[in-house]
Image (tube, rainbow, N blue to C red; front, side, top):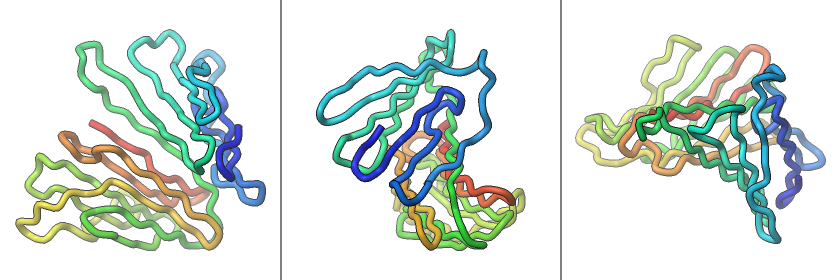
Length: 207
């Protein structure tokens, strides 16, 4: 599937995006394959001259789905999740996107009241956590995996909210994401993790 300058591949074996490329560069690495019995169904729910929308739903699951919309003239994908716990409450959800990154370092920046930049090497991670119900409405933490410490926090008494976007960059690529209503009435997380064998950009957490 093509949208803007990018080509996308959606595969049930990987739940959603298997590949993103622009003809010269690969942006996404395949993640762990899902067993055949657990692979979701992917159906076309909208197709037209302006956009295509694919719906991903786990087999036998009627409680939720993921809609992936590909605007024809844009180089991005809109991901809309719908899920509940059977009581009408939004369930916890998470998305991982393994990125193709080159070099020993990568740069991450977050929309957190203002722009927050940090450089990551192997084994390091950075995360933006936000919840407008807390006194400290957001924070950015960095460090070795499992040993994070505060990197940037709001000024005391600040009412600024996190914008809820991130960029992940190496010398050749930049991948961006944004989460609607990030940290509004819930605890949301964007985490950029530099693993020892691959780069992983955000799991998105909601809950």
